[in-house]
Figure 1 (cartoon, rainbow, N blue to C red):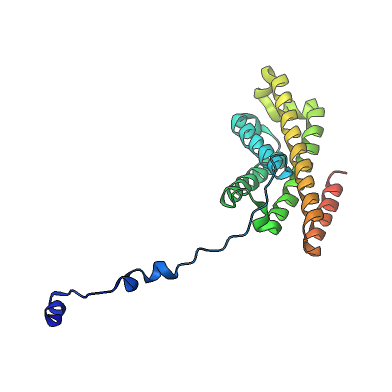
Figure 2 (cartoon, helix red, strand yellow; figure 1 turned 180 degrees about the horizontal axis):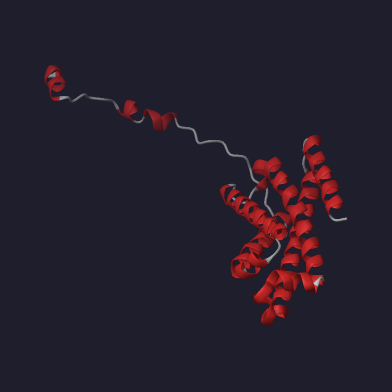
Length: 196
């Protein structure tokens, strides 16, 4: 009989052999996750980043007319915010999974937001410069564009403030490497020199 089964390609197996993997399976141990509050500065950064993305999308004509330095800052912030939002979704909005990575992103967001707000506010105060860059666009819509530029500056200020609060939170509540925090100090010093 066994010879017949072998010829037909049939082999008898026991239930324990069949279910062996299921019996020895152990689910992956996952750590308990702390609850992240909605008012966490992390979410404020993501919200302000979303505002920036929407403002840039709706005001493409205006952004394309800005000085190259301001366009560059907006584009870099846009790229960082897209990356950090994607990371947030992958990490299920738990920044503790990659604290150093998020901290480095926040350093860059903080410096770009600060510098963008500063330069945008200074640019808005110089009507001649604004008219020069806006060209034909600015003749009839100057007040509207000024309002939009101020909104961009406000988003930069919110990004700078929220990212600063987020980094303070990480420094106070978690252990970060000294060289990581040193990068924040050096970047702040660099930005202060650019704002003189």
